[in-house]
Length: 282
Ligand code: CAA
Image (cartoon, rainbow, N blue to C red; front, side, top):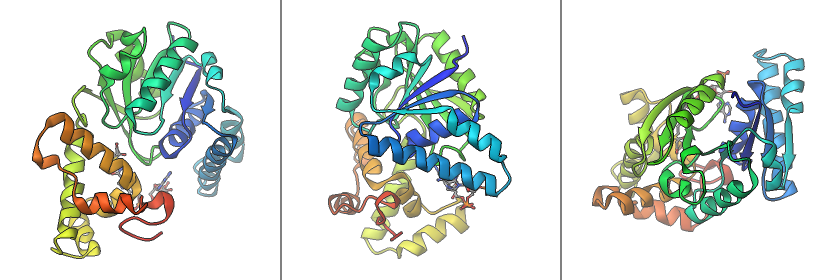
């Protein structure tokens, strides 16, 4: 059955991007975050993105209105019981995700697929917090969600073929290209991306070059749309550190050791674009 209503847990950077593309694709969206202020901020951010799309004549004012009207904000997890498909985009902490999935499993009808947008945590472990591990899967969107085409689909050990097929179908209806991979730390995207970002931070720490020079080398020399330090700021330095720790713990190799300078920035509260200061100031 094609889902009509998509529930999304979290209205942060990733959650609001998923909510935006789902509402633009014609789905009813139940946007859930912990506090009224966060729900409001999520909906206002989506409305701003849609305003920009109207200004650029990518969508009509009527399409903008319809997309916004399809989103229902709530602080109640219970409301997600009305969704046909749920995507969790809560913070990247296993304890939080395990609690959310156990609660969703209690609340949602048995046939509802529960997907996690985790960028590196074990999908098999998250699935085991529910009584429906066959209907739990990783659906990893890239940032910024409205722009990036990829959805990395991660099958847990017990994920069924039907669930995999439903997620591929949904990703395509959202205008994305799904790619399947297995449940190993960091999957493919972050196993390849994070060591590059980490190495760029080592270059900065060791004074090999300035932050601008490091980013320019990768932009002009390798045709990356942005340099690795600017990209780390976009992703969030706390998220980069958390993913590197998952890689380091899960794969046990020194090559994934987070650079001390990255750790120091996170300790200082320099988290990147989201709070105005990372490797650059915003
Ligand atoms: N939300 C929505 N749209 C956005 C956006 C955002 N946050 N940021 C940029 N855009 C849109 C712009 O509106 C613009 O749209 P139009 O072409 O329709 O006008 C388009 O993207 C291009 O933006 P800009 O012209 O402002 O700037 P740009 O050409 O430098 O592109 C970028 C910006 C898309 C972010 C580009 O630099 C890029 O692709 N960077 C790399 C992003 C990347 O690697 N993402 C993956 C991160 S890893 C990840 O997400 C996984 C993980 O687990 C950590």
